[in-house]
Length: 581
Image (cartoon, rainbow, N blue to C red; front, side, top):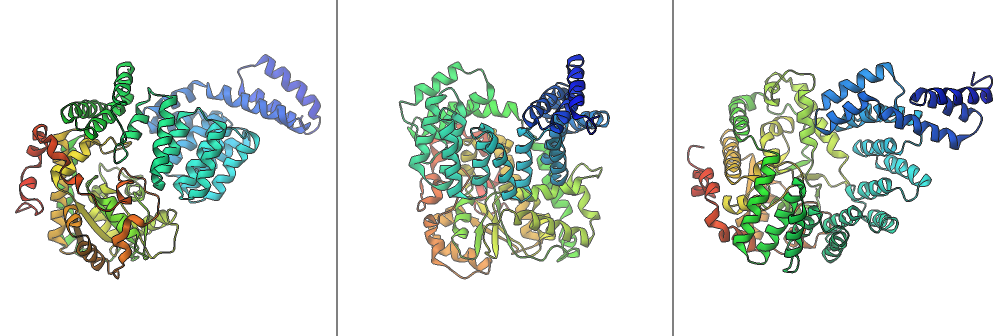
């Protein structure tokens, strides 16, 4: 009827909406009729009513709950079943697109988001979701155009302004990101998250005085938020002073939220550490770690089993039989090891070389590993590797190179991947990327262990919230790397943090020799290199080497026996590897 008599179709659709107020299809029919008569404004309103009603569908509600609890497969089943009977439910399409994006099925995610937007062009959440996956696919400018489409309609849209600033910051467009953050704060000067995220951006850019001011502004708006106090305490040197301590304690007394309390305990612990109050500092760190560990326990035995299985699989014979089957490009330089080992310093040194681009901690190798498991009935990626053909190994390497190319911003021939946990994938790297370089950065196990215990991570590193767990994890790491030292001697270059501190020139020359790069004096003046750094060490790598971190743990030695015991012979033999490992 719409095509023949759109005005009559509007009247009929209004009756349907009146009679069926909870039927999304009635609102969609009314919207189509309104568009046919040129009433675009009301059509958009009716489309969004259809979205809102569709989101209340019990299947969508169940899917949202499953998604929120990490049961992605259950959420996908609910949505798939619903969309077979109601293929024009924009909310269901939006949520399914989000699931596809999380699993890195970026083309599927884009298609689903576009289907949702075809049904409801004013569905801003879906448009911003599309922008996110476009950015993940390396299409930043297209992503920004989608965000701007929202801002044209609603210039003060908080989520759109926030996403624009975040996308520009993540993609190292510093000047444009600064402008975007200023626009965000102009429209939302009392939004504590906006000030916090601006502080994160300033921190990565090295504008430390402005960072402190931004975090302090956020705290003034929301002093009860533990994440803000932790952001401030996570700066080096820690700018927490004696007047802040009672404020953090007050927030702790008032907070019932476990996640907030974790942040507050870590903030207070690091603040008291900076003030020299070591006993009370450790009590706060102990409380924060215990609470965080209870929320996300670490399965140390399962991880140790993975290490032992890796050693059993990647024998010299296994590696030799598959040598040079992977992607031949020599571009990647993997910087791996324990978190808080000094790897950010090594990356900053290398990023100061004219032939190396520092691209920071990349998630791409984890994505490659996950891709191995798709469609396979296997408990671990290690179960799949023996059956891979030469072409499959090459495809894994090419997939990594394609994925990381989206993170590149220069034409320098080499780039760094500083994801510490990549040590667990050392064997895969050797075969999928046989010409890549691997730099293992190691720090004294007590210094490294305590630094992890004092650090609250936004994501992952569940081992770091228990002293014994840290020691076991460190020992597993040493054992794994010792294995590869035996089966591929000389293939991996090791840097000890203490050696860098004592002899920067000599260690840098050794490192560059391993990488087959000419010496460049800029590597010794790494602190002059201007680049965004998004790790906890961002402020430290902007200064000449500081020795204070070498002995920080000693003030807490009386409380660190569980760490010492779990390290076993690793502590006694450091910097050497225990005999027989």
